[in-house]
Length: 507
Image (cartoon, rainbow, N blue to C red; front, side):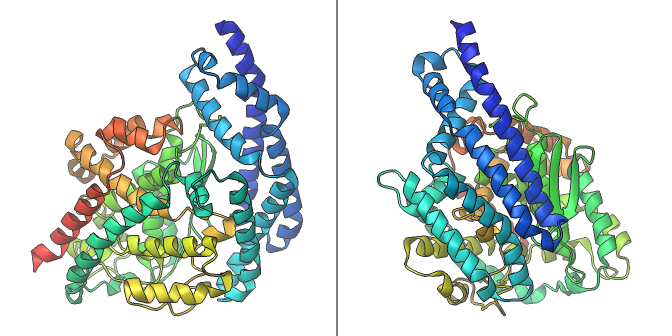
């Protein structure tokens, strides 16, 4: 019987191999488009991407795969599969049920649109011209709503469908409660903290820091946290991101500003956290449908853990601060470690999400969450977005973005069709805090950082999260590691303790 079962799975294997190979090819096109491809190439290249996307669709959606998945998902047949094979069948079945309802010609047309939209967005942002991006965004929203209509289940809204694609089982009802709890805790704490901001001078951050020196220091930081340049590379793009082909080819990007030292430093630590996740996936999983991170929220937990929990701590910078000052002796001559720690953690409302401190960051995500819900439900239209965006920034953060480049055009996500993605950032922060609450019971985290020994931290995360790829979902990983599912209280406690310690206890 087992032999027969293996034969059935082996019949599925060529389709798995083909879909993974085509997915890697599409990833390479996306990477190239965001980094090195000439601007004039996109229109013609989009046709190639559309053709490859159509082949990917056919590799997954066909009668043979449907028949094999039906057989392999039967309870008696599941017993004959290995744990890895069961995980692959489960993942592929979920993907199949979503894709098969989308007509192939529509899928191809949408992928061609997305291959063009990123460059349209980048040019619109560069020119501070939302009107130039709006027609493309309208098309993307229309496609997204159409596809969600195809796949939504009873009781789900269209936006629920989009959320579920990024974090399985986390829908608007759970997120409304999650964000409500954060809002109740963060807003009053932020008021107390920002009342103390006058004593923190971080003007050092906007001094002139030559970009070439920033590149050198960021490469050092990437290696320092464990980025493997034998299996990964760093490039530059308009919006930093991480992608990969497998666990031996992981790619991150960064973006540099001469008058903003922190931006590139914390971007490389953030993207490095994503990269370490992909490096850590077990060899038997990589190049399979379960060979990547389990969800957007869990992936963000890793990047935010490295960027914030570790990267903005005093213990992290104790062994590094001398090198930072050696790199920029004139710019940082008057800055002590204590000044720097307060500076990199200064809580101050601003318009740019990626530059936000930990305390104001969830408010940026709440704004995007509320806007997306309204946009997908039809309460607002694409043309309303700049005004709605600015209104919500005034309401939540008490500021108005100077222009659309610093407002509604600042994020790449909508140009990639990633509606429902933004809440993953807030979930990721909460997961990172929950992981940390349990990690430091088993590992002397601060001591490891002060000794420049990050290996125990990497191994802890690899053991509990990275190696599993997406064979387990977020709550399964958390339950095995911490004994409970996602619990926002850890995040609230983390922010309260950190900012009370940094600000209020030093009055």
